[in-house]
Image (cartoon, rainbow, N blue to C red; front, top):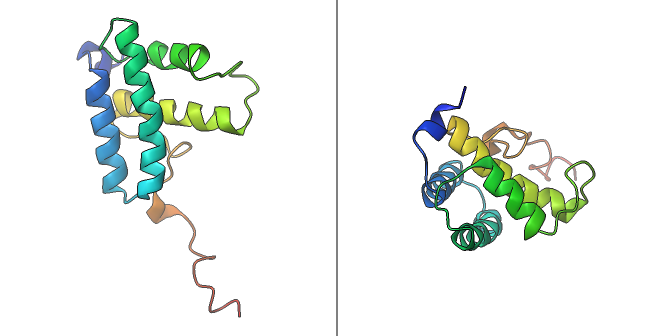
Amino acid sequence: MQPKAYVNQLLVTEVIQSANQYLHDKQYAASRIYQYNRMWRLLLVYSTRKHTSLFTPELCMDFLLEEGHVQSFDSMIKYERDKYRSMRILIDIAQKNQPSARYVPDPSQISLQFMDISRAC
């Protein structure tokens, strides 16, 4: 059975817009959003070259293997994991309308123990 998102046949641009809106709503840093958007723009170029505008997880994974210089999903180094994370966010947004906390933790849920440096002094 296909997830509901694929019945609707979401466009790559729609998924990217939803992901951006989610990250802005959760008050993610502009620099982090910029990094994700840099990868997502490359995904758009890739999807255009593949003559598709429909979003699928396979499109993201093929992009990582062909254009993202990811050798294997089994053993990734840091920069490969960052690229993978940016694609997982889109996949999760398309499937359940919010990314997994594993890939995009909610900033309000992150421990603030290190935020108050005055207590450490």
